[in-house]
Length: 157
Image 1 (cartoon, rainbow, N blue to C red):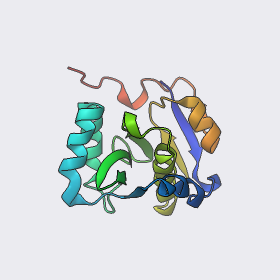
Image 2 (cartoon, rainbow, N blue to C red):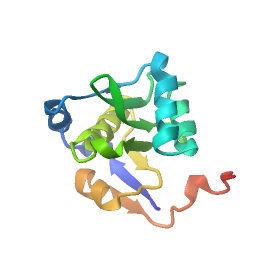
Image 3 (tube, rainbow, N blue to C red):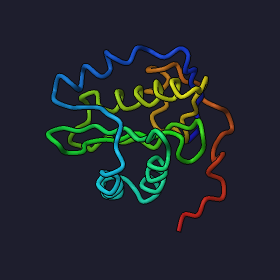
Image 4 (cartoon, rainbow, N blue to C red):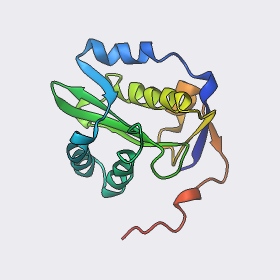
């Protein structure tokens, strides 16, 4: 999976992306450290230990660089940045039952807007899975020959 480059100075507005999930009762917000154990365990259960390790690093940042999607006081999704490398977006994921309601797009855009607010001009989507989604949503471009990139030599067992 290639990395992708995003112009943070040319992002679509955030509010419309937040409004869609909000209409269905989903709140998108910055996570806080007291809930770190809940978020990390949820990521392990729904995704992977690798992603949980990356997300754990988000809680060492000030401000915390992990955002969550919450419905009825229950975690349904997350997105992080600045965890494997500075300037990198990801990992991100939404629970299967909550997909298709705009939480993933909102989490993605809230992270990118926050990266811009923190002083980044460009963002990198690390090991981008849904390339077409990122191209359509923020005009991200594939960085050729970028896999495995920063993940080269990573321990996997």
